[in-house]
Length: 163
View 1 (tube, rainbow, N blue to C red):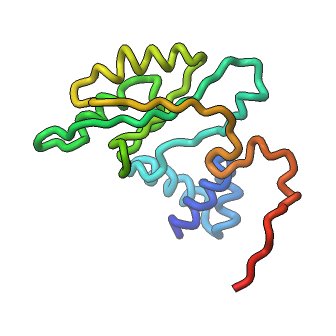
View 2 (view 1 turned 90 degrees about the vertical axis):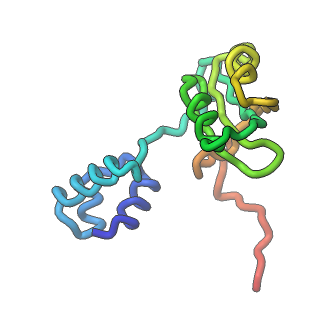
């Protein structure tokens, strides 16, 4: 079985049925099931997620991106600091990055106050964290490849280019 084709199909549609995947790939359903389980066990497939446009619900929801400057630890580099940050349930994503900060993390909360409390009371006081920069998401246009705030995707006003 072509694992890359399977992964691409699941990335495009995580709700695809085993039957549909088997038909597309020309494989037995049992092979697809065992292939997916194997990829999950190897942590190649790490989860299945739904993209929600919270602006269209009646729920309070705030997203923030936080740049974190940190000092690496001897023999562990940034890994131990990342492990401590990742344990907070407020953190939905955490990345080691290049640039003016060492980490970029995203936070989901109900209010800006919750984000502020998290940064001030939990994140900033951590050993190894030297500074933070909090940026609140004002509007989302595209999330994980899905246009969520663009009403009519067919009206593409970009100019064509030729090579």
